[in-house]
Figure: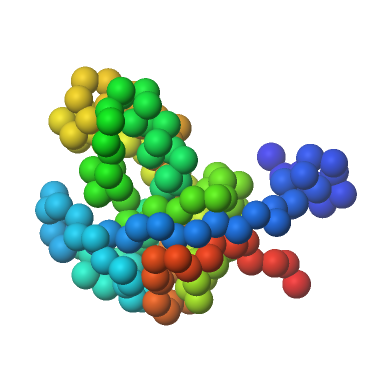
Length: 167
């Protein structure tokens, strides 16, 4: 449903002064391989992250996956896990301080890289093996988002995450 630009709800949705921060980055060299934690990564326009097995598909809506640290903490609490690391959840970028779902239908910056929100990143059945029984359901609604790279560059830990301002 498309809202009128002047509707009160659209105005609320357009108000997003918060900025997030990249706290962790990981790439998977092969399907099913463990994620490798890195301090920075090259984001290749319309391809993906250098060194990640998803890299290379211009048509893919899943060139990058992002998840909020706040959701990792929530999943750990639901699963009663004392320790849950980002690599266990198999997402590329962990951010904190911004609601990733508020970026729906928007372009946003991660450092000097322009991304486009393309959808929710739903959990896979591997979450049962990684997190234990109920892991899949614990992740539902908290799996983060997928994005496409519109303008490449480098993404590093401590880079800011913010919405692109309309001109």
